[in-house]
Length: 539
Image (tube, rainbow, N blue to C red; front, side, top):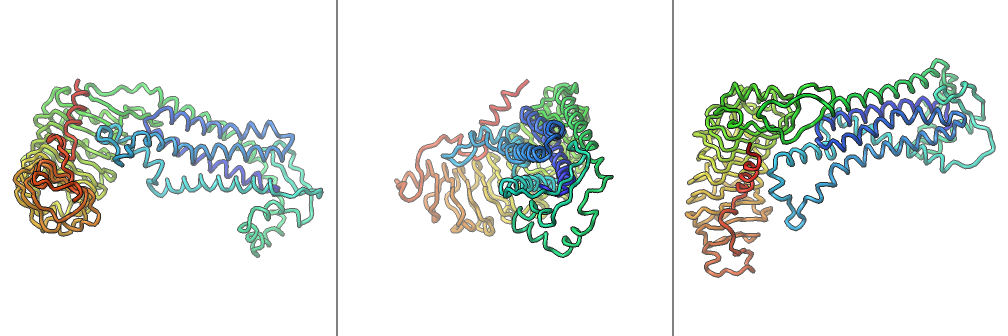
């Protein structure tokens, strides 16, 4: 606190902190649709830019008080930006969470706008995207620690009548005049910062530096740092405010007949931006021609798109513009017939490194599209859900292309008579074949599985399960409703409505739930909810 170099170090920390907060504000403008939160973050940043020059000007007559106020204000703003902002991103979802069922309601999970919000906001609040993001977040937290240590040293410093060595930069409004003091007092504040900093003072290299005149006294040429930094911070605050205002009141217009369910306002982008895009072929006046869909998609800033849905397309051709969606998190095809999904529009790691979700709902396709069989298939994919499709087989090559571990694999209401052997080469957490016509399950299908949830509900021809369904130590839910199964070896949370297990009066004490359920609700994928959502979004 009382070192000659305090003002220089504080200025450097202030600039680093402003850089980290600017990075945060810019990333939030790209990722977060809640403009009230973005405005709050920008407000904190602008206040941080302008508060230091104002405090230094207001307390220039009292340099010690100026330093204390600067540190305190800086600490409060840094804490708000680093701790409170992530909390504001996460806490609202606690009100959406169903603590009784320990899940979020399906109405929210399968709402693409809500899903993208969760993915984007949790990514910023809980995770790091890359090395640069990790560096920025580390520096922000380190700045808080340094400010706390400095303020702690003030509170714990003993009162002394001895004069102290002090140099106040022009940033503090002084003339740069210094006074010499006894060496024992020169680094009093530093030696009281804690054991780690005390040990640094006694390291030989630091002891030698302390004996150097250039180290003990701030060079005059550095006195210019103060006013230059004040001017820079003021200009920086105006620049940030300008970028945010221009983005907030952008005049970019959305493409005709393209639905945007979630809009963002990124800085320095002049074209239309949208995080969740729906291309409805009926509204676009096409059966699914690639050129029309491609033209519509290219009118949107590609890196702003996180989720794209193709709906009501009788002859869907996936457009090449999909390959340019570098931040894509999910893709959905609803109530459409896929006629062409070429390799140039394929899902691949080079173009879609962050994709995690693929939904195929009420889709007609004679075989698995080539666009889902690219050799460079992204390893980030963890959720594949197919419901009411006419696909009844998978090529064996997908075992080498798709990620070996999948969190979700649903293949429901699709007329399956058997489970393809290739499924046995994956490790899946939640697996469902509900609503099919499966007659038998071969044991090899589940030899390597560690299932948490497994459903073969509404397969009326299925009369038995394999003796062992993989590693069942983690299984907590087994759904057998509306099957012909009468014997089970596994005792877990079993739902067996309208099965011989319940017809034979097997009591619930055996771990079998016999409560009658609606046959239309046994599927893991909430088809009724999705149909309702799409009807509500109809033009």
